[in-house]
Image (tube, rainbow, N blue to C red; front, side, top):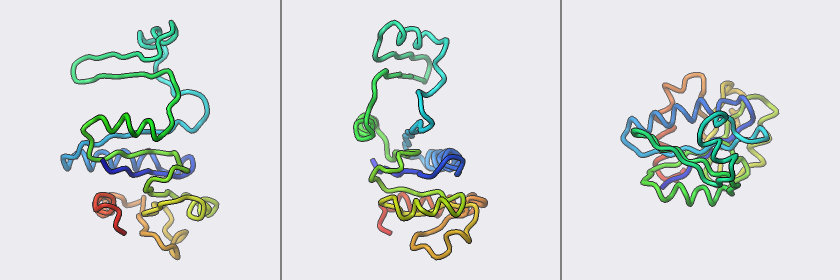
Length: 168
């Protein structure tokens, strides 16, 4: 299973890029997993009012629901990124795309929204590419740059770059 992170500050386009990459790779027949770090503090929303939420409130540390083609598990316990990756590794995935976890040491695409975000290119490790809506911000960088304004044009090249094994 290959792993690639999408990193950047809030509102830099991470979720949009993730969705486009998941869609692209899925349409090509790859089994893609996704993992998002909820970096806004607190716990992710979305369970309130469900039976699973009631089970968790009653003390269950793992709650699941299955119906049709969907199985959903909620784990009421913290996991480190490496532990989550091991869990994802138990599924038949070709690629795991991770949104966030900036400081992790996996290969990553960094999204640059403005000049202040350029510090990420000095602070983060294993950068394989940069995405931005303003290519003039990153003209003199050593990384391949992908224009987020016209990602339909660049998505295939970016996907090829991710899949070729990160050989630069």
